[in-house]
Length: 158
Image (cartoon, rainbow, N blue to C red; front, side, top):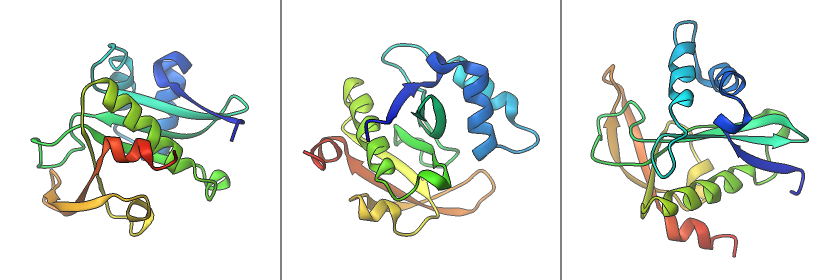
């Protein structure tokens, strides 16, 4: 696990970070969204935050902490969003490393809970995420909302 490190996207490089996030989550119309979001994410102690996982200085994953993940539940935050690990790196517990890192970031900003929305089955439940409710996207689709205690995420690997 020593080969992996998590770095702030703005420190890595805004353009390169935006390119990676967009390559995993974007479409032909929204590269500027990722570029602008990451460019404005470097304010200490404030959301949003975007992070990259590096292996030997090559990006192999990403995630963000944001105020809303395009979901109707604007009363909940921060959201763990855009989590992605390259297929060649999966199965090594890297999601858990991201969860713990996100919990450290959230705790430093005074948050007690993290939230996420997903249509994946199993990944988050295995790590103790609890289904909270359903929310709705901008386009009306229902999606599952999960929550996890920041403190519990920090204690899982101790």
